[in-house]
Each structure stands twice: as structure tokens, then as C-alpha cells.
Length: 190
Image (tube, rainbow, N blue to C red; front, side, top):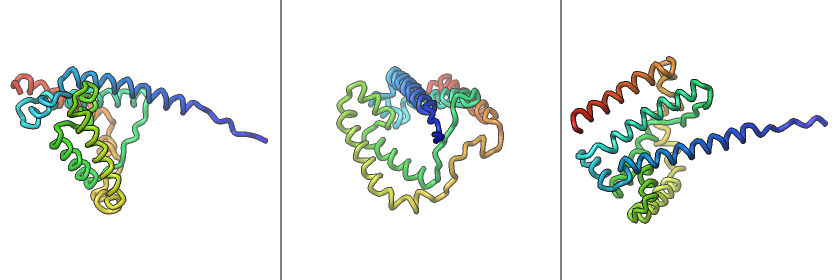
């Protein structure tokens, strides 16, 4: 009998990717904490438009992440698997995110950092809020799935695929524009 040999290389690659993701996640959390984005006052300052620390951190993360991910893709180290999306999904997700942000003053990323800092409001309200929010969404998901979540479905296409251009035709100008925006915000004292 000719048995098909099962290779474990994909499993090893998955573990390697998970470890890399964990390391980058810890590093990102460290930077969030050092930037002050896990502090309630900084986040409320952003929501009141008097402190743009969070926007600057997020723009920096977008530029760094975009260049890093497309560099690794170009080098053949990773493959992109973007999740499919729709305008309905964006609206529902935005509402859930906005309600949680408005009620507690943390987003899912900053709350993890705040929990790591030991902030009691994040540990109690934040974790409870995440569990309640996830539970509510899971309970109504089957009702939303075939209706609202499919409105304006645009699939899993990326901007370079949409415009049928090389990835870097989008990544480089967009990165340059965001870096210029960050520079302008610093010069303007925002």
C-alpha cells in the first residue's frame, strides 16, 4: 500500500508565524504603553480633540505595518489573506467599536495595554465589556449575516488589486502622504 507522506512543514510554518505575530504584538503593546495610548486621559484627550497622541501612534503604526507587511509579501515571506468585507459589516463593526469606545474610553488594542498596566477600569469594565459585546454580537450574528452584513459586499480585494497595479504603487505614495501628515501635525503643534 502506497501511503501518502504527510509533511509537517506547514504546521511548523504556522507555529513560526504565530511566534512572530506574538513578538510583534508584544512589541506593539510596549510601544502603545510607552506612547501613552493606554492611559485613559490620553484617549479622552483624543476623543475631545485636544491631544492627538493616539492619532499619531495609529498613523505611525499604519505606515510601519503597511511597509513591513508588503515588504515581507514582496520577499515571499508571507501571503496576504484579507478578510472579505462589506459596507454593512463596516457600519455594524463601527457602531460596536464606537459604543465600546464611548462608554469606556478604550478600544480593543488600548484596553489590552491598559489591562497589562493593571488599570482597574480596564480590568473590570473593559474585559466585562469585551465579553458582553462579543456575546451580544454572537447572539445576533445569524440574524445579521444574510441581511445587513451582506449590504455593499466588496469581497477580500485590496487597493492594489482594485486598481490592478503593483502593491508599491499604492503603498509608497500612501506612506509618504501619511508621513507628511505626521510631520505637518508636529510642525503645527497638533
